[in-house]
Length: 251
Image 1 (tube, one colour):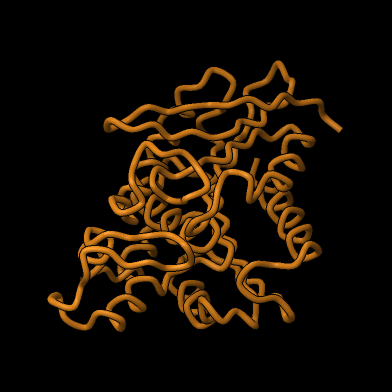
Image 2: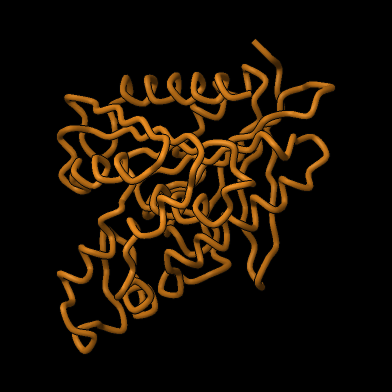
């Protein structure tokens, strides 16, 4: 296996700082890279095992913490100021930073996103088609806007703050997605996409990934029969191997 280093890496932008952990193989060559985006109230540690697997095969990995995206991570933005679009800005800032990184091959940068991070990844990939070699989405939460519109049918129903799964969201989060239709955006990404989803997911219905697979020009959907939202350890190991294979086939 390839030797690699692990270090903290920060990207300042828009008055805040995206922090994360960079897994960098020891190589004289410019390296392919996967940028990992965690889900709602997650952190950079969520996909560390997958990042280690990639690094051991001479593929760099960056696991970021979204600003305001978790009570477990950095605090450069309040969770009540975070939106899908501030997270998209964070991911784009990381993408820009690694396009300029001397150890990274800017033409071989991939994105991986889980749950809400999958939704954000899909948005950024559609904006930055030429800059993203390929995309892997793990149970992407393309249902977020639908869910909150159902919760708050009218704009006057939106509270200043609401708590979900131990984290507070602010009015900006809900207002920013009132008219969001991710399916009108994501199809702009014309390169290869791999979608991974559990059949028993009770948070993000499989139907959202099935619809996405039809909208993307080049997408494969793999359904895990006995997995839900958040895979088992064995499911996570399979995801990591599928990600590795996806990247290796395109570099």
